[in-house]
Structure formats: C-alpha cells, structure tokens
Image (cartoon, rainbow, N blue to C red; front, side, top):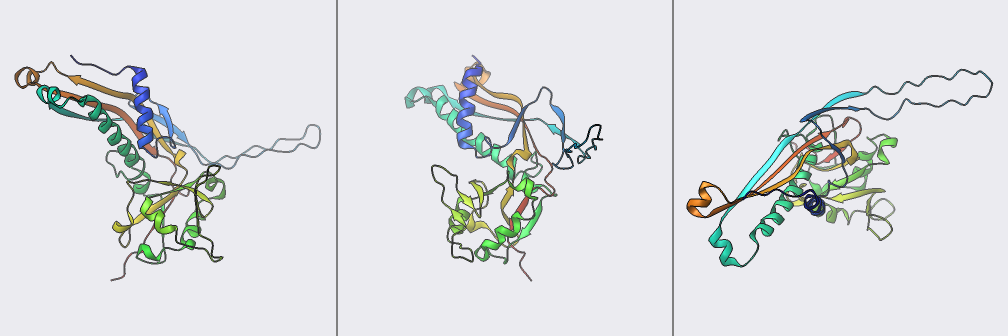
Length: 286
C-alpha cells in the first residue's frame, strides 16, 4: 500500500526540519501556485514625505529606486531508501521512523546549502552570487584575521541595510574569533545571553555547520558572509511527500520495501549587489 502524509503530520515534520536548519526560520517564505513565478524586488530609498506649511502647497513627488522583476523557479528534491521486510521484522524497531529522522536532517542541511553555498546546483546561494562584494582580510591565512576586517566588511553595506544584517559562519571560525580583541582590549565576540543574542562587533551572528571549517580555509577562500537573510526567497511549491511502497514487483519477489521523500522548492537571492559582503582570506602571492 502506498501512503502519503497528512497535512497535520507534514506541519510537525517541517517544525522538526526547522530545528536542523539555520536558514529556514530566517529567510522569506512564499507559496508557489505555479512552477515559476515573477517577483518585484527593489532596494529601499528614494521615497520622501513633505511638510506642508501653507494652504494649497504643492506636494513634491517621490522618485523611488527602480524595481526589478526576477523569476523564482521550483525544482523537485527527491530520494528513497530501500529495505527488506524480514529485516524490519527482526530488528524490533520502527525503521520508517528512523529513516524519517534521516530525511529530516538531510533536508535541513540541503535547505541551508541552497541558501548559502549552492552554485547553480540547481539554485545559486549567497556565497556563489557574482554580484556579492568580496572583502579580503589582511593576510592569506585565517590566523591573520583581525577585528578591523569585520569592521571594514560591514561598512561596504549601506547603513539602512546593515540594521537588518547578521553574520553567518562556521562554529570553528567563531571559536577562533572569540580570542580576537579590538584596540581597547575588548573581545569583538559578545557571548549570547538570555536577553540578547550573541554578537560579532555589534552585529548578530549565526553558526552554520556547512560553511567552511577553520582547518579547511586556504588562501583566497571565503568563509563568512554578512547579509540580511530576508533577501533570500524560498518558494514552497509543494510540501513534503513521504510514500511507503510495498506493492511493487520487488516487494512481491524479494520482500523489498521503499520509503520515498519528495519536496518541491525554489530558492532565489535577491538584490545581492551592494547589500551583502563576503569575508575571505587574501590570495597567496606566487
């Protein structure tokens, strides 16, 4: 018998997925009624209000920055796990529940990868966007990182955009940063408290385990990004579909069962130029 998830159960699964993903609760989500939709996107600025100090005074018109129309496409993410019914009988555990946990963790990591690292695979994440400005630290080694590198990087983003931005980096890089001090001898890392999230040089940060670990960062490699995560659009074309297949030829002949995962999503980084900055090590000199 083939079975599909109920909407209620799917909602519970997505809540579990969000616990495995850093980006899922940060990006902008929108339903997709078609496999491709066009979105208007624009930068802030150009809108003005006028004080009228006399009767009949003319209201001056605004000249907002121009909008762009960008396309958000959906593609299908799918996979399946096979096992034998005799094995399920002998292990005395719910293999379906175990495999479901693996699907949840894998999808959470893939969600973050599409938001950040994917390079036309099939979407393009923030790290791979050609319009994102890249700023070199002072040296070719991650050990050359200083507090000024962070300060110089954030000033490449306009002030009105910076207030919604935060850093994304691997926890091993954060551990290294915890030992960096500014010119007054104060650490640039502020430990999170119950009342306030952790900060790097005045801005919040998020630890993402799929980003480069400190031991893997070579010369000329990006390792952190400063951005407003709401600039990443996630389109939900179809929710999670989980089907168990046990009425197949393989099931009849070999007792083989299958659990299939299927999800249709779209990802799009909007207006990265001038609004995001990547921190990278300097290229090594020959």
